[in-house]
Image 1 (cartoon, one colour):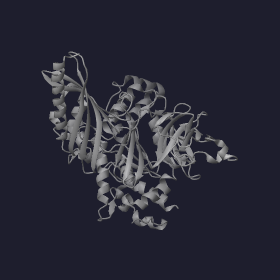
Image 2 (tube, rainbow over the protein chains, first blue to last red):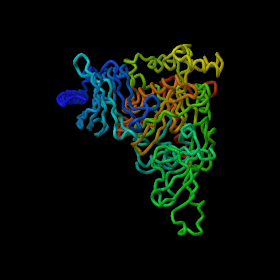
Image 3 (cartoon, rainbow over the protein chains, first blue to last red):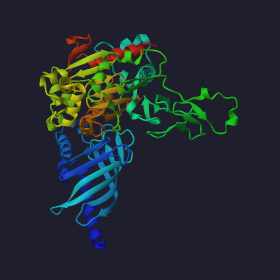
Image 4 (cartoon, rainbow over the protein chains, first blue to last red):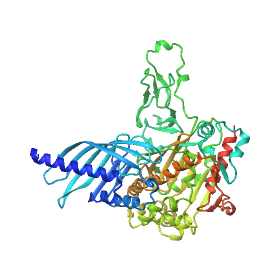
Length: 164
Length: 419
């Protein structure tokens, strides 16, 4: 367990990181967002429940680090039609909680988010539980793992082509 | 329009090289399609491997109708309608499970998983009632082809094999990719909703004209060889099997490459276990041919799209609301292959797919586009002057030609005209 002071310092650093990530996503700052990842990053958006086995069942997104990079490269072409024009986005993030912190290990943290998307189709509201594993690399916080559990991931979903 | 055309009038909306935009946008026509297509012809519902054990069930659909596919205690596959025979309440509220019976939560009527009514609460109020008259509704005819289960609400009509016709051979070609000759549907479905008419999806599945443009963003950054298959110099063909079934046959291109598993962007060396099993199952020469040719790209009318490595099931909910259910195909006895099939499928399809999110964007823009009053028609004449027949008598053309759309609409018209 961390002392009260170090815990307060950590949550403040983690919160700042999560807010920054949210802003980079909302503003389609693709390269800056990609730079938040560690080299072994995993970006996972499960379908049909919270705890499916992504090695056996279909997920909406289950990207290893190279596929995260491919996803970003595609967006950067400017010819990813579903994001041309880009969705207008703003998201609220709350309920940030440190879940498990072993000294020297990854920082487990979770948040809730609600995203308002305005696209050519319509306005769409997305809601999710986000689970992260963050890590200090050369003094900076990075994402090693982000799991986005959409509240309605068991239902038929409209296209989700912005960074969730 | 909002008035359903008489049988004699469909020809005014559907011509050999063009169709009227209202066919995609008119709610009255959508209702007529439900009656004449979805609730009459053979529609793909599910796969036997989704209910492997006695009493397994999975909830599927035919158009907007909820259909429970069960395997009863005798091992038979049933397609039951999710509607209590008492007051209409849905008897099943879970996507899948294992149950001998379904009990309606409203008044506790209980149905066996073959649809029979086996009991109701306080039975003294139903003295003399014949329970056999109060079974769950069911899809009238149920038939399987190599594990793919189809249903038809029409008591009479073509058999499933007659309906599949020449396209049955594409399913034969598909199952050969399993060393045990069986496809399995076990990876769960992504459900991708689009605000667009279902026929934009149907027609796009074998449209070889769009990939070079809609998918240029991913072909460019993924260093993909797929783009060339759909280029002007490609020797691949589009094919019309009749009965609305259409194909993009990429085998001519893959045979030129002459490299096993090139169709899947890999090599035999990277899949040693799979390659060994395929050779053991088919013999060296035949296995090599299969693995050069690649899996089929075929749209079985009206709703089953086999796209080489994955399958889509198209579900219309309303004139402007459709769902694409999609999963990775899994080949029995091919674990190393199956893992790659899942990984590739997850990257490509579904709401965040690097390919399908762009296709779906086109469906929605097309749907909004056809609401404009002019020029009224959708033009489908590409390659009409260079259609030819293959050795089996099926119409074929260049991979970018609109033979598939024309074939779909010819069959559509015949269904809508038959009252």
